[in-house]
Length: 120
Image (cartoon, rainbow, N blue to C red; front, side, top):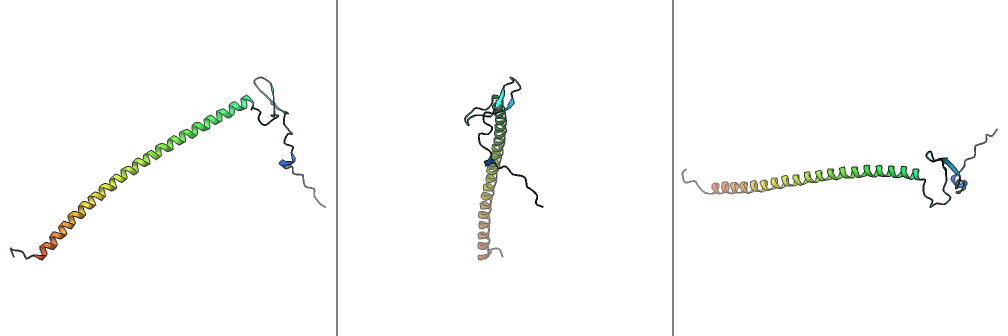
């Protein structure tokens, strides 16, 4: 015995204008009936638009705060990098100075070995 499978409704099976102009709720403040827009350029219900605007504003504020915090972190990283560059430059200067002194010392030691000492 074969079992019947339920029919599946695909989005393309539903007419696009099925709900246009049909009521879908009532405004709790003034009791007017909300309807689906008849055309695509209809404005949203004022309460819905207000809620969307509030959420968008909150999201934008959060995003701005995150961006500002990231800018501060980046500024601290840049400052740290600049400080490290200064330290590296000072080490480089000291190493060049030591290299120069050791070169002079080595030359003097080689020179001393090549000439006999007078007080021997």
